[in-house]
Amino acid sequence: MKKTETKFNNSSELQRRWKLPRGLEIIYEDDDIIVVDKPAGLLTVKTATEKTKTAQYILTDYVRKGNYKSRKQIFVVHRLDQWTSGVLIFAKSQDVKDKLQEQWDKTEKKYLAVVHGHLKEKGGVISSYLAENKQFVVYSTKDPSKGKLSHTAYKVVKESRQFSLLEINLLTGRKNQIRVHLADICHPIVGDRKYGKENDGFNRLALHAKSITFLHPVSGKQMMFESKVPAYYREILRLKI
Image (cartoon, rainbow, N blue to C red; front, side, top):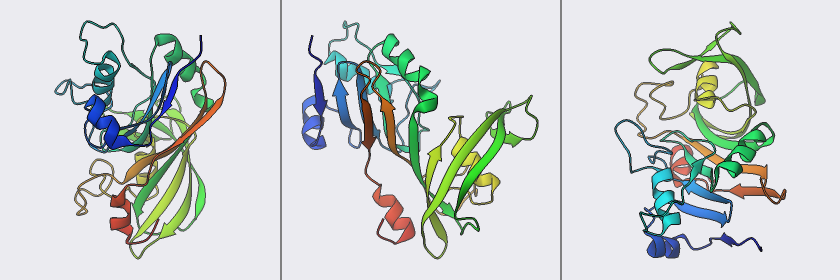
């Protein structure tokens, strides 16, 4: 059976056809996976207080085409924080989800972040053991028995008077890893009220999942998808990115 695939170039047309919320765009779809560009503010999965305004719920409804009796569903491969935008992969079966997660350490994930200040070292790797406390705050520790070893590679792409734009290669995928590691080196992400400055005058987190490269779980073909840089970043830096 020939695999069907779709690359979407006209997001407004897609939204008219399937009533996707503004900002959520399907970049690629085939019989096994859906790759989307998630807007900042949209949850990946449900929480105790929000069940329907999530990427998983919206895309499950999309694959069911409005038929609530359909058994089709979307499986979560990985997550982005609510206020992190960018590329997100979902699977259409448990088997495909498992295959993608099995190769996750070989999947290349690149991010863009705008941080406060100028970094002395314009490139490098931040490493620490990450743990989480009872208040769900992730923190770095030197005790390997308490946390998981985590690595974040970065390089400075551009600088303005007050801020720096970083490209980040996520070498491990722990919860809030990028946010914690950048705060550890005293260059927190703009708009990060949890790990950065309590009130820096910016109303959203300047962290964006720029691209993801992986092997297709069925065909074995190498896939790479990118999302557009949010205009918000240009507003912060006042530079052309």
